[in-house]
Image (cartoon, rainbow, N blue to C red; front, side):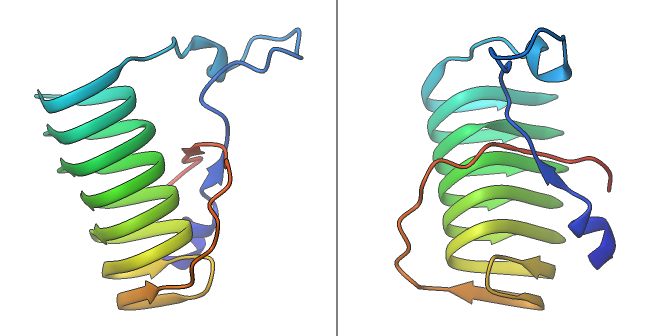
Length: 146
């Protein structure tokens, strides 16, 4: 399982304006900022959520301030709050990740799940980090394979 987690790479959500080729990132349009409650039967794609995001499939975006609950996965650049899903994959997390698999580069908080990976360590069941690191812009996570 650890090898599958390590194969996940971070790529930018948006087009590389310095490139003359078309890639998957070019197909993602600019998203909105949502304040309040978002409920979706499939998934949510947004730049920023300030509140609660709930869907039966997945949630993906740049930043969430609040709670994101999805049955399958959460994929965000930055989380300030709680993410609950089968797989939670972020670049920076301040708060709590609850899932079967949790992965983040910079963590200030807790991860609870079968396998938890952050910039400091990889542990089963529970992982944590409370170092006050300055979070700088990190490109959004995109899974290559799981």
